[in-house]
Image 1 (cartoon, rainbow over the protein chains, first blue to last red):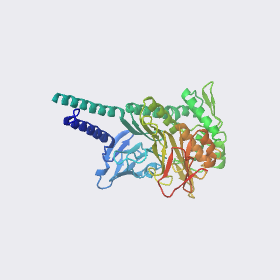
Image 2: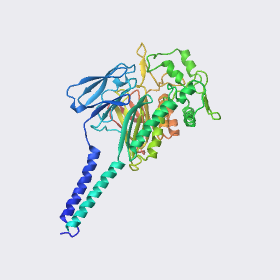
Image 3: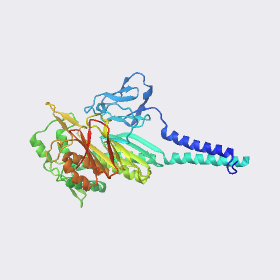
Image 4: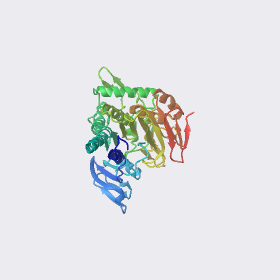
Length: 125
Length: 342
């Protein structure tokens, strides 16, 4: 038997290594499901877990000009807006972490938090 | 023997705790998305002081917009310049000096003295229209002739000329963010101000790279057609798809004007993405290169040590990246083909 390391030591080392690895994995890959966070005028208006959506539905926001979101399983998009430029509607569906759509005239921002990671760090447009 | 085991266990617990605490402190992340400068700003930071840096970045970008660069906010210095002579801050003197230099170097493809032209066309507003030749002629006549008086710290505008920093404000914001993440030594920072993004990875070793999706000019806003893998720096895109209107005959007019003609730039491009060390440069040059077209852009890019990805109307993606550089580009949409500048 090795004099320096007793079985109890080996167990402790194993626990230590597993503990560190587990913690590191936990912090880096905590995969909570995709959540649409809706901001109106800088304040969080609603958070919706997109995986839990069973039937698609429309959500009209209390903002001016009026804007309506279509909330689906795994995706959210602006489907109607009374603004003039319609940039928000033209943005399309948000599905991945970090995807963002905004209606500037209505001061609404929708961001996906958590969920599947985007393959890119940023999109330039 | 048992005692030794307990000591060892205690040491193990302490080390585990230290690893957790260190990881928690140094890999602390902070992120936020908000509206400023007429666009969406999204910030993602990693580092011990990331939440402090985030607060400061938000404050600075809002201040930059409201107090300095906005031409609609009555409290901003640009608003004051456009509405009669006003003494300006040293901060704005420095910025305008850089912008004047880019105007000159770009041979006038980039110009900030064009607010009157933007207003005349009204693209993106309910009043969008194609103006008369004479109106356009008048709007561009003296657009380059704005000057800085360094003695009195004022800006002189010729009759009818007003400043609009819309083509460069987002890049300027990236440079302010860079100062903040440097001071606070953030390990990794991605700050996207509309179509301009700051990528910094000072804590991630010398070979750190970032993946930037270049928007598909013919697709939706979250769709990209190519991925640029790049070293830290700033990346900006100008494209003809962001704001436009169609006249009665269905002809499309976009919002990036050629200051020499007063009409939307027509250089055969759908978008230009520029990568440079500073956001002010990448943002201004992406506009200038969009106006100039590929060939005439090359000397300007070289002058500022910048690289570009041009997407042409015939769906070619043309880059200035040589084969010895670290940057790589991958086309992710099959309907585009990759080419290189000769």
